[in-house]
Image 1 (spheres, rainbow, N blue to C red):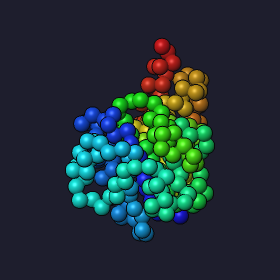
Image 2 (image 1 turned 90 degrees about the vertical axis):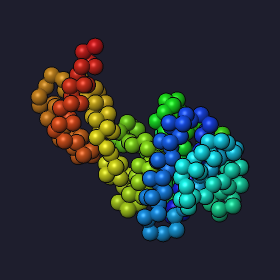
Image 3 (image 1 turned 120 degrees about the vertical axis):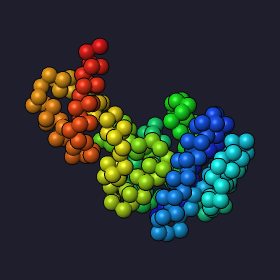
Image 4 (image 1 turned 90 degrees about the horizontal axis):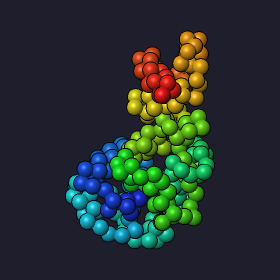
Length: 232
């Protein structure tokens, strides 16, 4: 069972002051979530090297009881008696399943926020620090589109998956309107006829509502955006 949440901040030096504050906010929310959970869960901020960004981050986070570990990743997991770490990476080849979380004693996340928008940074972190540990992506019905990206929401999904026994149900519970909208647009763009057929629109709405908290207003806006893009 999971005992540690590890956030890999080895690329903290690429952040601007603005994105560093965003990262700190997400870590703070993550810490609050972990603190509320019953059990001996601990949050570790890991980095391969020390940097000015870590000093800034520690000042922002203040007195939160977070463990900082600077050095070799293998040494870090050895020091904390972590035997089954699992890296969550949206570009991993395999999908995260409930049984993966039961197996793992530590979940590792890349300490990357929405900006800068550079693809595969989590994969870069994983290859740099922990290339030999298993990696999984949090996927919803065959795609990562619609899965929340914020660190604190990913951690919520991890814990809710354990409580519910289902990763997809946990994703549904933690989706904001932003992610519901993005996934609905994608599903509409997959079905060209939806732009012209009321019946197909109604069927698709009913289908998507089964695994997203989709309401009629969001669907209407998504339909308009998806069909505008198809007309270009």
